[in-house]
Image (cartoon, rainbow, N blue to C red; front, side, top):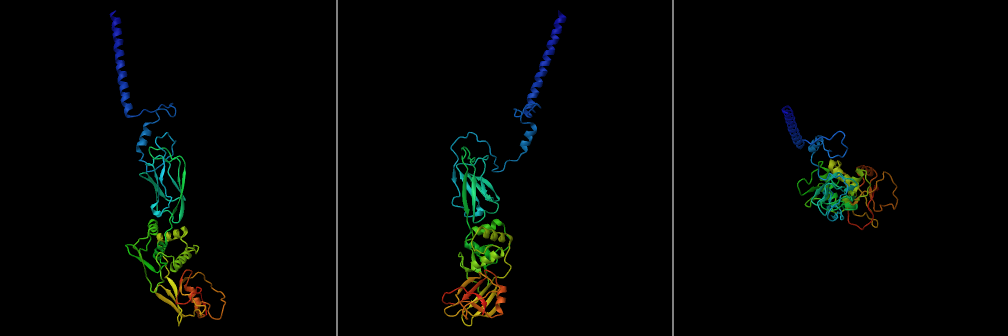
Length: 384
């Protein structure tokens, strides 16, 4: 009996010891699991509750914070609140292309919503500023250009439902005006004027494209154009006068543009590009003056110098040479002039002289006739 009892006592002691060991092991396992997530079994199916491993968790912890408006389209969940609305759109256009464009929602834009896009494409970034989604161009939206803004149907503001349908909005970027053209042409050397009135006004070196565009869209109000050569052709600030038209034609010819003198996207692309690179006209500003009073003379000016001075003959009574400022619009190396024996409102030169005059002039250069007479046709320069 006693042997049996002692055997049972021994078995009870063993059972107690095993139980204590199991409890210690279980406690240790629980403690470890709180520090390191358990790895899934090799046979665990995809999508099981053990999808995150210690390696994955460590990788996620090392990822940088997402940049503003990095958008990924997600399936539409059940959202609360009213539908998102667009409360401000660029219907009236964009006056300054360097400032970009913005739209406004009924609340702060949701970071996981799809973002708007522009066509034609433009270098730049979208940012969220309060309830606004703002596109900031790297340099500028192109002047004189129509853009289409696409706002996806999945756009939504926080605590609102989605927009519900895609919206397309077209807007125009303004064409800088004549004053901006004159100041740009002056800086590039195509007008005999220098811009004054503020620090850096007459800066002639290369600049950033954003700065060149900014000066075009918003010319400084205190800028003044002052003549930098003697007897400079007259210039009416803010008016597409003959002097400005002639300078535009010279610029267009230099850059292989159509001679339209219209303020177009193509023209402004070239003007801004030339300012950005500091590509000035290296030739001296050239023009012609004609004095129709006896003794009539013709002079060719280059900068402040007179490079040719010759006698001339102008129109007769009834066919007088019209006074004024006229850009050269056509050039002929050889042509036949017909009419009465005397000039029909022409500017005539001695036989050897026209070749010398022709070689110094180009399309767009000005002919200024300084005489008061009855109006007639614009002057032509040719042989007597």
